[in-house]
Length: 189
Image (cartoon, rainbow, N blue to C red; front, side):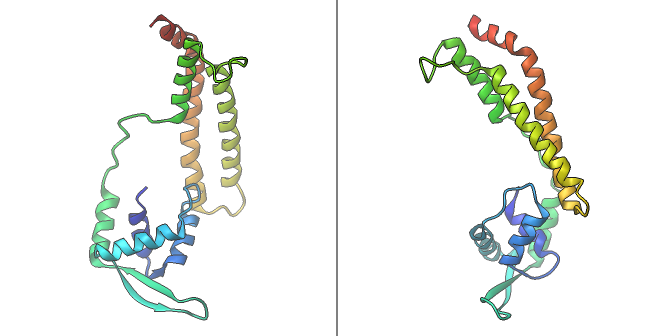
């Protein structure tokens, strides 16, 4: 996710200060990693440097002094360009779950163990435990999106996360059914 474009999007509704933008980001993107205040202000400084935003003024309104930012015409054009740009599907899979399954099979085939007296990694047990963790998170997200008064950002974000978790679970189920074949292939090499 492009933080600079998200912040430009938040500025599209009108001038904001960094503190307010951080709060809006976390509310609008509830399943995303929360932004750190430092990241917000650093990104805003870069937007100003690049001519995509500008300082509208400062004020304290009875509290600490805050800088008010607004988007520029260049920033508005950049936001439109970015929002219309098609995001290419990821060309490579870099999923930690996949890596752990493959490594577990390789380590088991090599007969190596971190603890010589303990069991080695077991891909089937790992997949079973990971699937349980995914299912628990899916239950949490379903409860979150069906809460009375859940806002649309929460519902859409939960739906997106649920679709990805569901795809992971389907992959885990398929892979569990293929573990013996995968293990045999590794042992044959």
